[in-house]
Image (cartoon, rainbow, N blue to C red; front, side, top):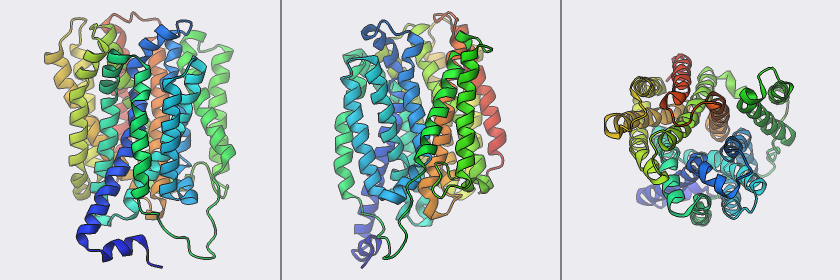
Length: 467
């Protein structure tokens, strides 16, 4: 029986190009939706307090954290589910869960139901990421893979950076529920579009069926990351020597260690640790972990600063974040050919240096008085340039350092590392800000200083990335 790619090629180059363009558009749309909801709720936290006044502001941030936790935990085994169910089936299933839970979050009557919906929404997003990139790369010639990764990364970078912009406009116009409701029609459109994708490979007769990923390991990983994030975020309030803090941190580290140990011998591990035998892949994952802590805390602290110190409305805050979002997308698109010619290392290092320079500028120049044109606009544009370059470079380093059969697993692990870092970074940010004056610019400098230090660490790690 002829394969899908053979039939497409037989139809002529123009048909093949149209098919590739459609596949790239659908997969990039999935990446956009998944990453959008990682940051679109940043501006909804304050508005949530009006509907749930009994919940402390600090605890409301778990609407963001719980998405990051389930997203991180399920990204790692996502590649194996793609092998088990098929790329198109996993993408469609993830889109269905994501869309259904978006609606559940939008109409949630209690904060507990909202948290559950957000957690399951993160699970749906976690299925969409490795499946979407696997869909692109499975039928992309090697010489075009860097460009395809660039386009896919640009969609994710644009979504992460544009999340506060979109969220601010929606919260200002219609309240926090609109932040989740807006993704419902987009999710339905994505679910319908998955029917246009090629069905994927046909398993040869007699070939063994891929094993179901380690479900216990996956649950332990999610619980471990969640417990660790809880300990870090509440450590300042409880006390770092308090039994609750120590139990939460130990209860996070122990399950993660168990999962890594199980994964070394499990036939279908939750974390494919053997991929780390590739030095470039291992370094790309470590750099993504560190960078994730920077990315998510940077985007969230920017929102808090603009609203609390400069007194911007949610709409004004969203618009202020727009230049960074645009520059991130444009740079991510343009970096694909650069990665193809020079490898990921220079692209990643330049992105890290640019982002660090923007951080130093903010620390030295920021004041309580608004200075959008003199400070925020140019610094925010630099931030977007750095984030766009880093997103493409790190994704390329991870995907192209493993064999084609492991693309989904490799990207899943890399994105999981970034998401885990993001959950811990937001938790660390909450610890730094606890007890400070939210209306004082000086209160936020510690978060930017943390980001600058982490960017330096990521640069040291990224120096080892090879072409």
